[in-house]
Length: 450
Image (cartoon, rainbow, N blue to C red; front, top):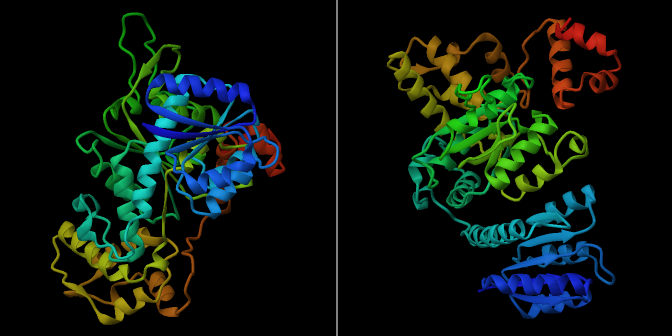
């Protein structure tokens, strides 16, 4: 039986919770109405999860959360409060709170969250207990991570964390710079999960027109009675894993609908109120810290709460230079085979250049450089004479952290910036016009909508 600690100064609330939870036969609740006693209780007893109010005399919920975090008490916390404060919710989630619920909460949903919190706590404990020195050979599903060539201790630990997360079915949030391999990691999680026999589908929000995306993603009801419905991407992934890159570009209404899929495995098609169930795991990725103030208005807090509790941070290539030879050789072998060329490796001079470059474009940039050099080489070993002139100048200049530059026409740059601003603000052209300091008509002119 799982032991729960319930902390709330409202006696009526805690009495109701105690009776409700005991009736399930799965939980043994301990009730605390005086919050200042919580630190002593946590020092003496162990619990599987905590339900915590925020607005209390003596010690507030945030005080208790900070105490748990600072003292590294491995206890999953579900906030259950009448305080609907967005900043407070984000701050508590950053400190490790599993979920932030606002009263009143449906009993069945609360039981579902408690069960997930306990599972997450068990998984988190197993991740934190991972030994410092880990090996790829120790992975249970090593083949799932083979395409992510790395011997970096930082990456190998990440692989082990990802494998532990793969065993569950919670949504996973992958954060990392452009080109670090977020989709490759998502695919590895799928291959290491019980869903490995199902489909894996990748969607990049940056590549879709948001006006058409709801139908493409959720499908559409039949236009005429008796006709088949139009299936969306979501239905294609039934039983598998869906990876959504650049999640922050989805407008708020779509974020809310996606959150329903994550929480309840339910969705509705366009032009239809009928609810359908779906068996899918969602993995999302972003380049940005979605907890930042710049996303306070444009990213759903409810969705954010479900993303950041199960997250992985992919380190940039500049933080793992020892991986460069491994990755470069793997790319070389792949490209040489694809082009049917006999290329055996790199000259020492070429490899020296790679090892002394910071790769602002990360693994994708390395892949582009090597692939281009394999095309251009006329010998068995890729040398600096195989580099494109611009890339050779960058690599031989000794200037590290130099971002690649591609000359573009000014109107293209302006159009891209305006389009990104409109998408970021939920396709609200009026709001985008205000932010850009131009009129809505000028926005339409730039985007070619007039």
